[in-house]
Every structure is written in structure tokens, then in C-alpha cells.
Image (cartoon, rainbow, N blue to C red; front, side, top):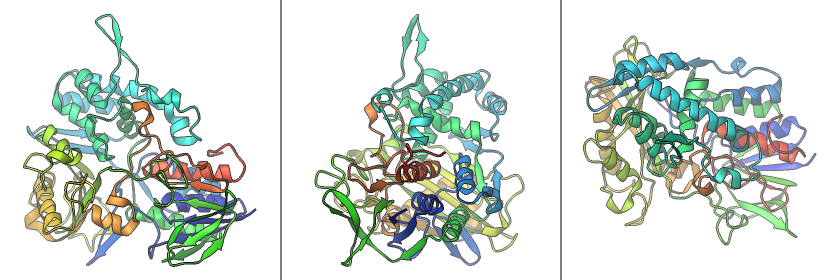
Length: 504
């Protein structure tokens, strides 16, 4: 067994470290920040606590497998997982309210029929049946194993439908929404909101993105008591139990390559350290691009980020309030153009052109007492870019961050009536904060790998062309998202240990 240097202490990096240490490797994790967890950050003030990153979990089986494989105990022995019920409430501009039950196909059919009219539920159910076919085709190569034969997944596996005697394909998610949901913009917005939440433009996302709502319906939506930061805490503790060494405020410039093979790491402040294997869980500039070590592999690109507003409220959380509410934009085109079309972008979204997600956990651990409530409001927004005319916005300029937050809170009042009157204070986090805390250029949030689009959403392989150099996390296979982080780690640890790559 050899010495492994892991760069970064995000979820994928820590999961890889825990698996490798369990296998007998000597593992040292180097993290530029003062803490671990990456995107699973935490903000605390006056007895309130908020997740800075994702607030809900899908596919918890990935982390159940991790904790069993690294300690022979269930994940639930370390954190309390709770299925949110309902899975989500959706509010539309015309006043329609859709309440989706958690992990219930029959319940979803009834809910859509009640909200949108008879037949809507069956159309949605049929669409998710086809999404299941996509999942069955792509699950192994796009989540659980090394990506082999990517050409066969470059074409979208979403099934063709018979139209007027011919089989016609829907190459994009927007085509699916327009062609299969009865022409009603509300279920179309429901479908597209899942892609938008992952930073994907539904007008350009592949039809295979239908797997995103399918995963929620098939496997449920879960919350971790205390917030998802508790999952990062549990994984960090598992790493320490496996004798992984952590060095915080240890900024690595990149791997050291000698005679075509990794020999260690180089520090940003000077100096090197020997290692037999290097696992990169951070988007290092030295890795990507024409002059990088991983030739022709795309690192972080111009994907959007997230603006998050943490709100401390006086007054107790109402009984029966939904954990998650999505307030849909009234003007789809303007909403998507503001996020994804730099040339026509105003500094702020115009009224009606903003979709927000409101999280209201029923969790005593995130509020000072029963007479208060912690609410988080998020929206997909342009990345941070200080260049005028660039692909994003300069989130540090003037009052842009606060002005955007005010517009988000105005939209969120549809989900939390009286929010502004109850507000004690709020804290705003923009893609500029994400860039500062995680070193991800622009504060972009990586989407998951999806089939179709000629492989445009595939990520670099976990095993690089340089012997001894491996990649994990959202900027490598299988892309962004908490489940993907866990499987990226499983694939990489298995490769390093001499396996084919994957969880065994």
C-alpha cells in the first residue's frame, strides 16, 4: 500500500480518502480552507443554522454504501435521515398550487390531476416511465462505473415516441415538455425546474435530463437532521476513525510529475511533498486546458452558480408547512435568458423572471427555539465574472447582491406569507462567495453527467492519462451532485486499489 495525497476536503475527496484508508493506504488530505465539506458549508448566527450548499439529498443509498464499506455500520447510526413529505410544493403564477407526495407514483398522478386537470397525471407518469428507461440504460456507466464506450451514450437514450405513424425523438428536455405534457406550461415548468436547479438550461439540456425528476419520485427526497452539513461532519469523523490525516490551510498548486508519472504534490507557497498517488478533488487550473496536465479535458466552464439568502424569522413554523416550495417564474423565456444568455442580460432579473426554491426545515437544531424559524431561499443565477461583457455578473459590484436578494425574498413571500414582517435579518451568499470559499472559478455549480448532446455533459475520466493521478468530484466523472460525489469516490478508490472502478 502506498502514500496517497488527496487535494481538497469536499465530499468526493473525503469519501475517496475514507475508502482508501480502509483499504490500507496512508492518506493525507490537503485543504486550502480552514474546514472540510466543500459545498456543504454552514452559516450560523444567533442560534440559527443554515446549509450553504444543497439542503436535500436524493439517492442516500450512495452514502449508505460508503459507511458500510468503510466501517460496517449503517449511515443512520451517524445521522438521522428523514423523508420530506410532501416532496415539494410548486406555486405557479396563475395561482395554481401543486403538492407532490414523496416517492409515490400514484400520489403524483392524483396531485397533477387535481392541480392541472384530468389526464395531466397520466401524461406525467408516462413521461417518468420513459425516464426510467433512460435511468436503466445510463445508471451503470454514468454513475456507478468508469465511463467506457462513451460514444454509445453520446446519443440521447430517451425513447422515441410514435407520432402520426412515425417514431420521433425529442432531442432536448424542452421538446419533451412541449410535446408530451399536453401543451400546458405548468407541468412543463415542473419538468424544467429540475434541470434549472442543477444549473442546466432546459432549452439546451438533453431529453435524458428527465431522469432528474424520476430519481426524486423513485428514491425519495431526504433531509438530514441538523442540516446536510451533518453529513459532512459524519464523513469527516469516519475519515479520522480510519486514520486519515487532514492538513487545513494547506494550498496545493498541483501534482508533481517526474518521468511521466506522479511523484507528489507542489504547494502554492513553495515546496513539495512526495506521494505515490495523487487524488485531485479540487478544480486546479494546472490540470485542464491545452497547457494543463490533463490535455483536452474541460475543467470548470461557464456554468451558472447559486444565490442563497438565509433568513432568520421571528414566529414559529406553521404546522403543515412544506419543507420545500418552488415558486415558478411567470415569464419562462425572460427567466432563462437572464441566467443563460449573457448578451441580453440585465444586472437584475425583471419582475416575474425569477424561479426560487424555499426551504423550511422542521428541525429544532437549526433555530434557537420554537418561537423562531430558519428559512433558506435559493435561485440559479449567472456565475461570478468581473469582466465587463463576460459570461456572468460581477457579484461584488455595488449593491447587486443585496438587490438580487430583495427580489428573491419578494418572490419567496408567496411561499412564506408575511416573510418580510417576520424577518429579523438575512444573510446573502452569491457565486462570488462560492468562488472565494471553494476556489471554483466563477462559483459555478457543476451539473451531473447526462447522456446525449454528443457527450457535451460528460466529464474527464477519474483515472487521468498520467499514471498515479486521479480526479474526483463534480469536475470529473460522473459530474456534480451529492450522489455523484460519492460514486466518483467509489470509482476512483477502486481503480487505485487495482479494481475495474466502481463500488463493490
